[in-house]
Length: 82
Image (tube, rainbow, N blue to C red; front, side, top):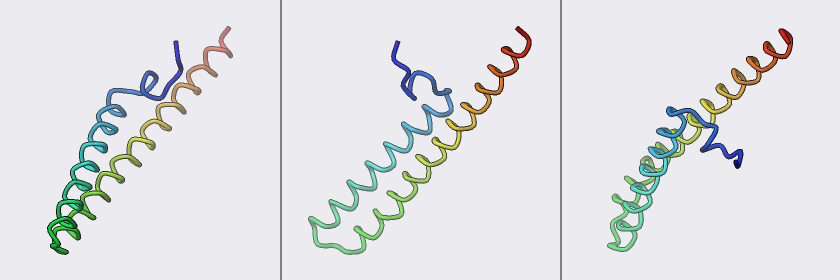
């Protein structure tokens, strides 16, 4: 078994990662469409959407680190008991 973040992450982490990917992709698509049509306003609309996707990604990393700290703390407790 590979020890990847996806396999070891919680459901909340997975949801945040998928949400971040979708929101970022939508933002990139809006920005590219705005650039292709020559409308600067649409490009500038896509930028905050991309930033929102990045914030979701950062939130996912925070959740993942929180889960890891909890897991390590529980392992430390079980090794002390043994």
